[in-house]
Image (cartoon, rainbow, N blue to C red; front, side):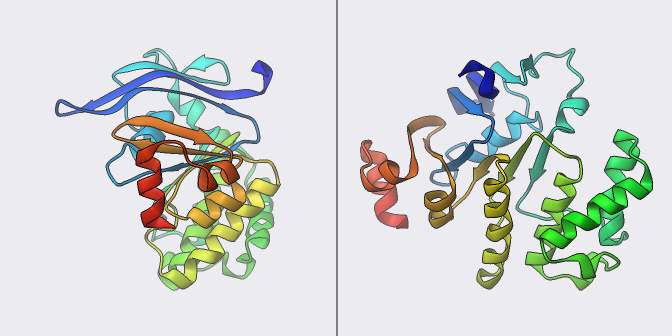
Length: 245
């Protein structure tokens, strides 16, 4: 239903140095969707995700976020980014700040949230991800998995309408991957809208309600997880899955 659409992407194109990285990409993302984007390196997955919140500026096309075309030059993108949480491969925490300060600086400075309210909310989120006892620690004292969980909480502290994940486990040691994916699974169960670029096929199969395969800058195939993984239609997808499953 149209009323359920959160993001509408229409004919999105992006070039780097004359190479077309995204070729007329179109997709609707509905409230509560967990959309996993998979595909080979260089297929345009991260570029697409970065275009969604204008970390990369598309050359043409539209991105309607909550009905507003954020590709237009007169749009205050900073206001819209507050509703788009983003988690990167690297954690990007401020090393000179405690965990709690990392979590509360944006709500206080950007949204004008009262400091006590911001702190209480941040601590409640830390409790949910098992890190309440680390609120006063610095980044250097945390494992990679703990830092990534803090990065997720930092995004959630802004109370976003959608969470964008760009290969959030790719920089982690294998034993730390599970603790981050567990937090993401919990978010999905809470009906958080999520767009996830990932190489974790098990996560895509278990948690996503839609899986999209990108190849050479195009959406080649999309389906619900069971059909996507057990009965792929596109030959390029079949080859890709044969190598990663």
